[in-house]
Image (cartoon, rainbow, N blue to C red; front, top):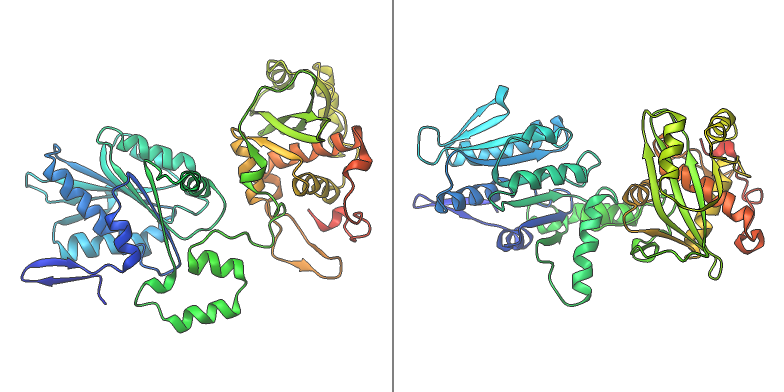
Length: 440
């Protein structure tokens, strides 16, 4: 069935049930999270068209601005732009696309002049001068579409209290997953979120999607892959390092740390990205609480040390750096903060100890430590698995995970400093055949 038809000069839209649910939603922020080819992108231009007409009815002073953004130029060129032009130019006949301006002008020369401002999610600053009545973001679940991009769009919608439509397949456990969790909290107490609406549907909801193809993918691909890309559901892939991490369990509201709890520090050195994590340890429950963080760039060692000391925590132990970063530790000690070499330098052994804390429910993270939470949810192995050593060969893009490294140093130091026997669970790293050569 075609998405639209024209009868007696009037356009009739023929939405499938998932699209219709999104169309009927009156929440300010509508998130359509659906399976591939489920009819997300073709829905977006019609939603923008309705918001444009609503602005005309409210007598918004022209030009009436709309925003359309997606993650990459190839996606924009091959997917979003053709769909927008198909609706606003081919069907409605009101569009004039000027490529050099990255703008589609609407109804030029009439009292209803408008613009669709075309934006890349990686350059949200380009819309800072816009005051829009509505925005549509496609594939917002991809890495390039960040929380900062979402925030930038919201600022452009503030004057008119404009609405935002997000269409995507779930790709990772980033900021979009936070939105899903936020909505779930309201559902658990029998309420609706005042601003957010989450609408999910599988690929086969699109009547043009072949159900035999849907079942073929179900039978041939891993369950997590099928759920994410064809059911539109978040599911953890098997190569996540900290697969036992559950935000509902391990992320907690901040509280005042008791004075008797010791505070430890984990530091990841770097000229561009220096990260420190403050960890409070509850000896009664043997639980480590990550309570605060510091991140600094392009500062001297003395400036880093002064910034960390300004937090005024009573630090009783600090660990940081890899085995070969002794010069950093020496410089920091000279600046007034002693950072010890982690007692275990092997990367896999450190990962294993962090995993034990997570699996035992003894690692808690204060809610505002979003950079660390984000890294934990993304920290993954490369796809290549070596059955001979029962391990993956490498951490994917490991050099970018500064918060994980700081956490690893602190947990290794903490577990060796307090009561080591209490932290041992399962076979040793040697028994598993793991070594540092297996994770680079």
